Length: 55
Image (cartoon, rainbow, N blue to C red; front, side, top):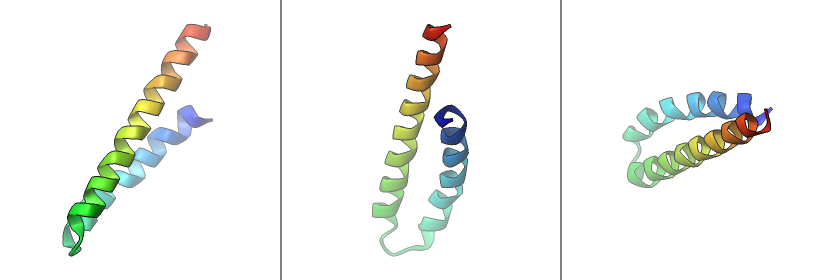
């Protein structure tokens, strides 16, 4: 389930990076969004690797 949900979550967060450019505290929010997306990418590839190794 996570293998499918993580790419969808990444897709949802990417437009948020652009929306936060208008905020006063944009640097804080953009850094946080970038960090979340990076963690999701790492989790996704970890799950993908585990699935490949189980085959």
